[in-house]
Image (cartoon, rainbow, N blue to C red; front, side, top):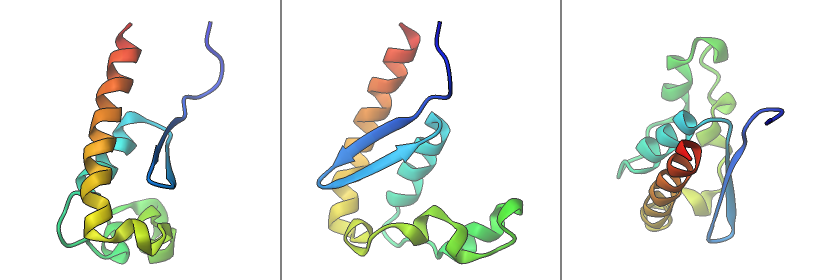
Length: 92
């Protein structure tokens, strides 16, 4: 029997991404995979709970090294592979 909530962690090139669900991981892959990142304030406005505060969105909290296109290209590939691994493990 499993207790508690799942936490999915993926370490890539010195940074650890943490997700409470696979949907969060999928959304992160979608956002980081964009050549031009959306503004955190734009993403925050879409969430009703945040009331549009840009600093409340996870994207605004990432280190600048993680936001570079070069880093994100590798991270998105790695996160996508991790997603497949997590999905397979949950099916078993």
